Amino acid sequence: MDEFDVIVIGTGSAACSAALRAAKGGLRVLAIEKSAKLGGTSAMSGSGVWIPANHIAAAEGVSDSKQEALDYLRAVQPPDWADKEGARHRAFVQNAPTMLKFLSDNTPIDFRLIDEPDPYVEASGGKKYGRMLSPMPLSRRLVGKYAGKMRRSTLPHLFTYQENVNLDLYHRPFHAIFKTWPKLVWRWLNNAGAQGTALMTGLIKGCLDAGVEFRLETRALGLVQDDSGRIVGVEVESKARRETITARRGVVIASGGFEWNKEMRERHFPGPLDRIGTPMSNEGDGQIMAEAVGAHLDNMDQANVYVCLPTRYEGKRYGLPINFLYEPHSIVVNRAAKRFVSEAHFNIGEALDARDETGAPVNLPCYLVGDHRFLQSSFPFRWYASYEPDWVKKADTIDELAAKLGLPAKELQESVDRWNSFCAKGKDEDFHRGEPAWERKKDGGNVRLYPIDKPPYVGLSVNRSIIGTKGGARTNEFAQVLRADGSIIPGLYAAGLAMANPIGTRAVGAGTTLGPNLTWGFISAETILRQNL
Image 1 (tube, rainbow, N blue to C red):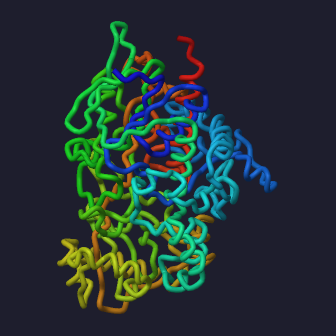
Image 2 (cartoon, rainbow, N blue to C red):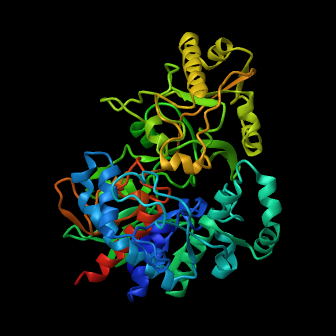
Image 3 (cartoon, rainbow, N blue to C red):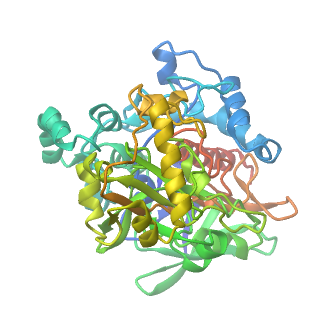
């Protein structure tokens, strides 16, 4: 049997953070990857990383503290999460800055601050600048033989996160290319990418330098326990051959979400679903294995809920995560043809996914309704919409559009008329679109209230799209997996989207998936290193 100190299941950000910290601590580490590509969902991401009180911001003179970050989390998370997740929020805030400094010192990743505020900046502890970071471009050639094995993205990773924001790539793609073409050519010639490509290239390079072994196309089938119940290894399958690999110090489950497992997804997310924007290998293997050894699965109804444009990836129907819901001359309505949220709200996905007491969605199906000027606002929208020609419905009247969408015509006309009256006043009296600081930032400081009154009219479904479920094995503040009675399953740890994530559907910043994921991977390794066996 193969023997390692630590086995990490997965190769995304949480997995590689755990593997790197354990390896730098002197342990022999194996990271296994079910698919033929390294990097997981993180490699496909825009790579916004939310880390409060970090050393990079401090070097720029930005004032922040761990207590302010904790105050912010408490202020903006759902009320019933304060007690439930308080210990893990504190663990994240305490460890996140240390994790970032560790990655800066032990990988080639060049993190830079992003000029983006906390989305709830008005809340206690909110900050206008200093918590959002993203990596500068790195060449895939840094990882040698794995360069061709790095997972590609549907997002344009030739651009950095900040370039994407500053140049308004969604609305002005040709201008953005013209302004940056020398950089883009250099990156293309050097097989370099920014965003998730840079993050995962840097992490994997750091892991390789630290001696981490990677095995691709190796699926974890089950966890191995000794007579005391301790997790001591993983049963895997590779090339139709099964074997057991020993983990002397522990196993870290960091295998991602379960959104591509149809049965699990429909059980925890009933109702309409438009698209998925993550690797198709995210089938809930880690959650299933953890439950099989007695782990308590929690937060299974939480996810990164977003809107996605249709695209193709690896030859299949896919989702490209782009928020197009606050474009001019459009509103979003629910199945009753009523508006229910500001279209520019940072967590509009939470509103799309709102549930009743039985867990059933209360707003779905949902639709964007606008006039023809909505389609003129973005060439990329029209390009990607062409992947599903029947998605965008057109009509000469609101009544006709309502019939095509299956909405009550009278209520839809009332919603459009009410919106148009707000546009005339310059104020959204129902949901205050464009007024919070986050929305003003996204709208370039303008309150964009434009009427829907120039036919032809357009409508399209904007149901939930998922870019990562956030439920899984319940852990304590040390990333140790727990049973339903709160006892620890020795030798088993979970991080990232495979854990019951302490920041759920209500994100507290654009980088509050990757920031916590990296941190929980780091925490799991720190806990393993402290164990006396």
